[in-house]
Length: 258
Image 1: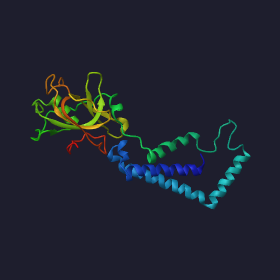
Image 2: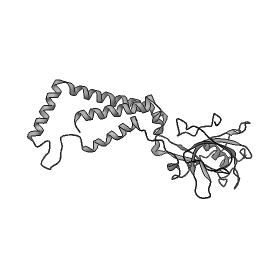
Image 3: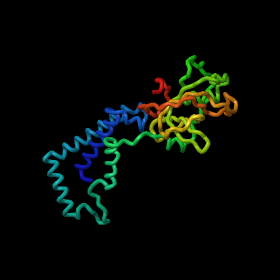
Image 4: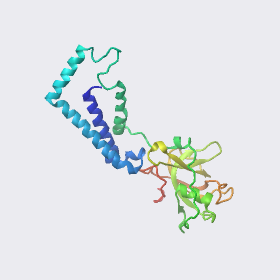
């Protein structure tokens, strides 16, 4: 890869990062929100490096050096040494770096969804001894993690008989297993994603990856407040909702379904 193309690659990578992290929220498909300043800084550095490289190539002295390099390569076999390999520039595999740079600008891959969640075990429940009282409102807005913890650890069984409302995306279940309301959570980036799932009974499964808000009551089984209790819901209503900007959070359903 010649120097002009290296400059173009640096500029494209910088512009792609700035587009994803500064001008849009596309970065939330791949990393946590606290990484945004680092992405903006990285994009700015790459853009400056690429611009500086392109500017240096325009200088007359630099052009003369480049011409001399080309003449030197011509005299010595076009940059090939005795082992038959080209050592005059960056390896050809560097061309592959154009793919992620261009994808950030023209086709950003979607965030992870049902395909990933269906191949993962559910995130372990964090041990919790005390729970705040549930609000008197009905239905009660809950996150999937809060619902899971209350079903399997709340000895007061405050969730019993209460109608709850949760939001997530659809992950198909196995035959006769209903389907799952799901959230994917990340610590740093999509590579460390873990799933939280609540099995849904009593309602047909919407298409995979559809974001929905489900209202219903706990699906009885085992002993509520212990690990024998199933993390499941008997659905009363299932409403499609918009996909949130940050899909890697287990947020409350703050607004009612449309």
